[in-house]
Image (cartoon, rainbow, N blue to C red; front, side, top):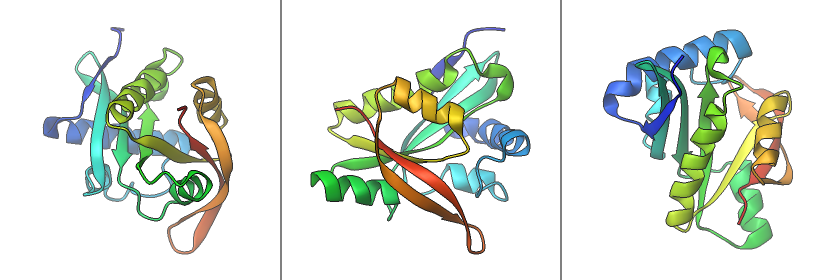
Length: 167
């Protein structure tokens, strides 16, 4: 299998990214929302920038930076730091067969570089069940800034940890 190419998201990537998202939801239960309309969820108006990982012409991963809209991680960071130059790292996923080859890490690094060059601090929340993702964030130097309940669906919630990117 070819090494993944990380590149900015293009409109032609939408069907492939949506198919990958649905596949990941079936295998991992991630995300807990957005799967009923994956193309709309991936290209919401809140997206500031996004990247895909492509292997052999197939989209195998995705990450986006979003404008904050009341996310607990953003609120915690602003409260703790007073820094309002914040974006939310979200919609990170990698197909199972492409994991263990640093694809998620490479997607994260692309997003982090973009944010750094624009003076943005990144925040995210991650469900406590997603242990591999938590290990990735910690390995990349992200700092845990608190806990929250991630609300979704019809009154459902799941425990989450909030992180901020390294300075």
